[in-house]
Image (tube, rainbow, N blue to C red):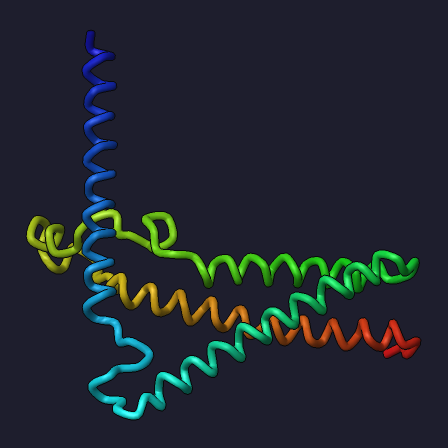
Length: 178
């Protein structure tokens, strides 16, 4: 009988935790919609130059990613046919998989698994334990912005490494040794 009550108590805790995470996610999506700045704003950008610049930059970035991905795939297929290109082949496969992972992470939508939801509400814990007992936490918007910047920096690094490896592939393909 006591085992049944313990299982029920654990289920209640799991339900409370799930409800709390859903509530935190709902707060985050509301704050994100209300507090983040759009790339172009009709009130401050009457001639829509910011919109055009942001759209042009986004298109160039996507085009660069697509071109590098295609070049990597072409190089991988060619290197698989070459007998003495194992080190470069391994490096290109690694960069290709890193690039795919970053693209997926960059294009993923917000969910309870993709954003760092807090385990507890800081305001409630400060009211319960006092301000000196609870460590300060950054807001979810700050954490998401930092994560997006980290992903963009990682993407830039991977693209630069891919370009270097593709140059090495071109030298190998053309018979030039570095």
